Amino acid sequence: MADLQDDPQVDPAAGDAVGEPPDGAISGAPSAVSTDAAAPAGADERTDPTADPTASSDTSSPPEAAPPPAAASTSDVARILEDPVLARARELLSRHPVADGYSGLARGLNESPWCDLEHGDSLLETDIPRLRHGGVGAQFVSLLVPSDASGDAVLRATLEQIELVRSLVASCPEGLSLAFGADDMADARNRGRVATLLGPAAGAALAGSLSVLRAYRRLGVRSVTLAGADPGAARSALTPFGHEAVLEMNRLGILVDLSGCSPDTMRRTLTIAKAPAVLSHHPGDLSDEVLRQLRANRGVYMVLCTASSIRETADRLDGISDTAGVETVALSGAFDTGSPHAPGLKDVSCFPRLIAELLDRNWPEADIAAITWGNTLRVLRAAEFVARAAA
Image (cartoon, rainbow, N blue to C red; front, side, top):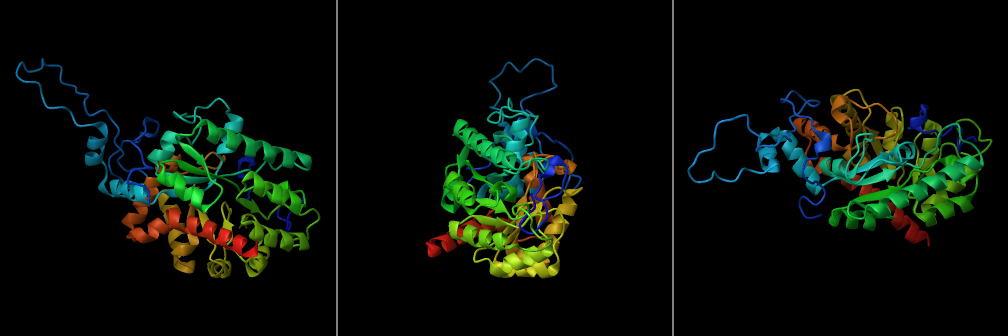
């Protein structure tokens, strides 16, 4: 299928480019799944001690006098030994967790259905212990399908992934909570759960029908890409169906995801959209013109954490915030999508390392809170406001 503007929407996993709770409620104790003990050496090698402090190499007999004082807990010793900037990052994320704009969890579970998400599994880059350890409070789970799927196969695969994610959340009620909007996202955070939102769905999964789009909304889908949706679309153009789809998504409160679209399609969409748009997994850089237009739209560019180093990811965050303002920036981990990650960002538990790098660069805590949680929540609320006004 072609897309709303002709760039085919594909899943990065297939090798093609597309693109205030109580303190501590989100961030739990350090998980044994994510142990990276090292001396402080920079953004990619920060100290993250999780060793048992009660272990000792002393083989001499214990004193016969009164019993020694109780040993400090592992978490207490870890907080003392940990890089102070990393500890500050964890504390910040306990108050302002990450809303991850692009997770490949559905893809990962399709490939490894026996994985234990609740207790941790090394075959995935995401599980509940590491989500907590990484300070993740919400995640958008991608419904994109392999690029070789077409026709009815795309629709069928999308519905199967929706069912998979909903079943997964139901099986982990103490760790995950299905979220259909901003209020659900905030409520899950307040209850110490990770809010799980459905989307983005591929534009091709619309099958050129607004009725299918409305059906997805009833199933809980919160974002849909424009790329790949319109059969016979002209190159680098927003088609008549694309125009109708944008306005219908605004009416339904579904986020318009511009990832994978051409610059012309982005500019045209941002001109007609009545609600903020997002880019959850765009593979390349945006021009300054598009970034400024995205800012005027009050939309959000969710920066992929797939650069070769944490510093390079932080450089991108610096550049976008300098051009379009910090209110236009958010984060997409792209874990379990098949995309490569820097050694210091190998799974969802590593978000504190990126936040520590931003703190080293003197980012204000208020700005970090905006890119981790506030901007994504604001965009969801704005989309819902537009939908209520159109009802």
